[in-house]
Amino acid sequence: MANEFESGTFERRAREVFDASVDGLDAATRSRLNQARQAATAELERSRRSPWLTWAPAGALAAAALVAVLLWRVPGSDAVPAQQAQATADPADAAEILAAGDDLDLATEDLEFYEFVAVATDEPDKGVG
Amino acid sequence: MTSSGTLDFTPNLRLADAVSRPREESDLQQSRALDRFLAGVERRAFRIAQMALRNPDDALDVVQGAMLSLARSYGQRPSEEWQPLFYRILYNGIRDAQRRRTVRSRIFALWPGSSRDDDEEAGDPYEHVADGSPEPSERLMAAEAMQKLETALGQLPARQQQAFTLRCLEGLDVAATAVAMGCSEGSVKTHYFRALQTLRSQLGEVW
Image (tube, rainbow over all chains, first blue to last red; front, side):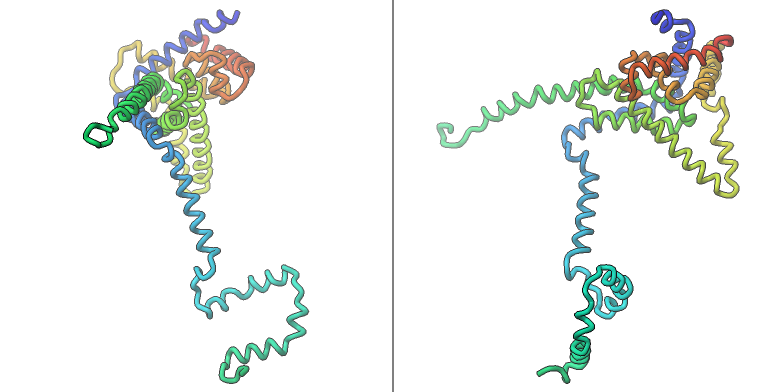
């Protein structure tokens, strides 16, 4: 039953028709397929000689990500002017500090001290000592 | 050490040469085997991709990608394993191309005045018939029959298309077809049987 099913007239006809369409491919397509095959064979040679090249794109991406993280995290690498840092760091940082839920009582207790430090920083001549 | 007091590496070089030469020959044979395999399947793979995608350029891209992937990822494997692996890669490529096309057509559908592109997407059913040059009547009849088969095949569900193409047109056995389709042999038999029934009912009379 299975053999009869597989070797039926319909299947044979389908194969013949398909084979004819394959044989009828134009020269330009054949040429491009030939080039693609040669590129694939060359790829096999290349991957055999330098298997690390297979992972080169992933490695390059990982290296770039590592450099980006280092530039972001290393202290002093963000050479932003002090005034610009003050201007840009306000709302997000404040929200983050509040969200962190740290004990802020310390700040309110020594408010006079912080005011003194601020004045001393702005006017060094009037500072301590 | 030689009599003149210099080190002689010649025996070691000979040994290394003797070790590496069989390997080089084996690599060369593997390359030739891959070339032969690809030469045997490239045109058929192209026609399969063309039937599924209805665009020769997309089909060529998919076949080229499948060839490169096979060489890169499975080129060192035994050549007996290549056929189902190649068709599996090919069908994955076809599916990806179809998805990209769907996304692209959705984006262009939102674009004003893009209806012309959609019309082109549908395509002339006789556009990709093999050659424009005059052909003998037998080839013309075969081309027409192929066109009918292609149209009927295109109306089947994707898995039935794959089962019919691989089993009937490519001649893969059930086990290899199951590997290529990534499913069980029982599923292959079911898909193939249903595809054959539908195609017979549609084409049996005209064929």
